[in-house]
Image (cartoon, rainbow, N blue to C red; front, top):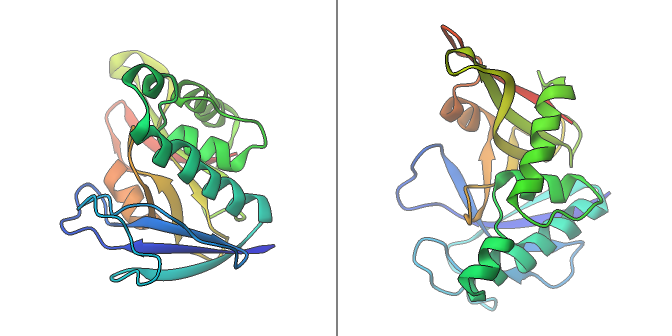
Length: 204
């Protein structure tokens, strides 16, 4: 196991579900990778990261390394790419969770969504948080729209069986965030059943 430290800031006006934006990652006490503030677009001063909170988690060593790599090689890099290359390397919650949880590279959002769909079809129903580093997928079946196969809506990474929080990317070309399962599940209607629509969670 290795120590993963997430440096976070609170959003000025949370929308959707409550979360803390991840603006820095430290793995095993090594140098911190700092991202910019996603709300003000201001760069974080490494010498004096005002307004940030450091939160540490014990996770498998590769989880911290891959989360840090995704922050640098997808989220931060995408801001400097041409539109053509940005589309080729587009990312979302599914590609982030797939990259962190799996040893294989995930090139873009399409492959991440394919893995998320496989977890919805073949994974186990998640009643409690799985071990750190496992991918969880929120999705459901909407028979009214003739979607009889489970469709993935959101993916996240577990930070441990005893921790009520998860790591995620907020949206297509979004930023990294730390959130409580309760808030994420509430935002996506997990456990609700309205006619032909049923939303649930599965783990890889």
